[in-house]
Image (cartoon, rainbow, N blue to C red; front, side, top):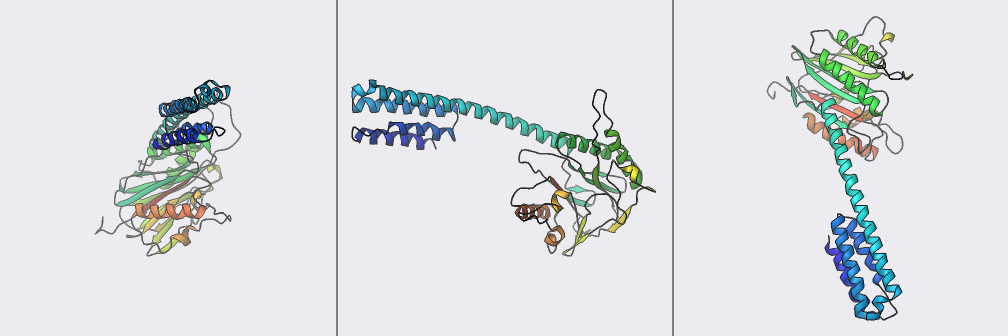
Length: 355
């Protein structure tokens, strides 16, 4: 790449020397350091700028020694020095900004690994894959969440979405994930687990000493599942979250809750306790959990992403392959950029011969 500005300096110098006396191409030399700044660092840009200044001086000597000391030629040299110095300063600031952004990305990725840990590929007899798509290019984590915990007889999972955005949503997501990982190990029923999670979200609304009480109420939509190691029945409590989808023999079936509960944090609205819905998750099925960043993704015309229609007929049974295809299809639908964060978890219950 550096050959391009150097070749430009040589070409401008030769043409300027051979051109008629009334034609001056020296000002075009400023393009050489400008081009270098687009791909090079401050040292390379400064070197090319210095070569441009030397070339301008050589042109003045060759064409007419007296021209080197003319006001016009000296003004051209000073302009090259000024522009070259400005480009070097720009490169220094750009590299400093790049280092800062690298550090920010590193911190964000570290926070993601701590708060939103990647799910293992195998959890008991299940094969699992997870995917998080941030709406903002520089963001790594937001208010969408997922987690899985092994129990003595099966696997418990949660997928949720915190109301709001920014660091407040991240804090609430971390609080709920910590509460889920701590409580899901206990030999408590699914109802007791969700009751505990709701209490944790409500407790998170209480301001710490010295903090101001905010009027906005926090709530988190979530789906909590219990998948036993043996048998095909799955227990589910849906707290205002998009329902799971089971893909079986090319058919996409939405597992709607018979009695959905209000979002976590609004447990006082529950009457008679949480209701556990059940559905069938057989060997060879693929279970998809997701947040509304998937189901409410819009294309240019404002049409929502038709999840069950799009995945119907897909033959991928491997969770990772399925999520890769879903990611491509979802981003194609929205034109490459999501309007909201999206989290997805795909779970396969393989046949015994494949397990």
